[in-house]
Amino acid sequence: MNPNPWPQQAQQPGAPNQGDMALFNSVFRENCPFKFVFGGVTGFALGGVFGIVMSSFEFAGPQLTPQLQELSTKQQMKIMLKDMGNRSVSSAKNFAVVAAIFSSSECFIEGYRAKNDIYNGAAAGCFTGGVLAAKGGVKASAFGCAGFAAFSTAIDYWIRHSD
Image (tube, rainbow, N blue to C red; front, side, top):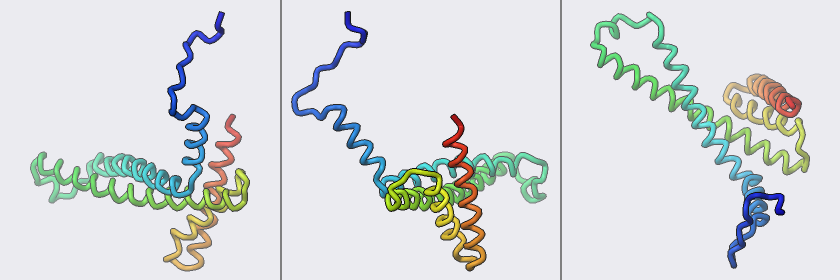
């Protein structure tokens, strides 16, 4: 009796086998430009959701301006939804930039070092924080580097040791 209850699918002539597809997928996913794009897209999506959630809290309380209170409910909703959309897009762009820089720099560092360890994330975090704070000067870049490196190291450590 066959221990596998699922019937085996016949390989079609000329079709790539599963081993070839797995190799293609792993090489494709380990590609730094792919990680840059994927990081940016997922960062944009996550940032958009985060922006909507955070902007909705701003309108949850009674702190409406007198000008806004005088408008009809429909007009208030229109203004609030427009503001939520603007904040969501702004947050999405920021998250996309951070995720794209971090994921691609981590990929390049990992490729250069030829190791997959906690130090790749720390170095990528330092690079990302330094680049994002560069407009503020050397001191801001140093603090950005240290902050992002510490956060990235803590997250990486937690992920690797959570089992």
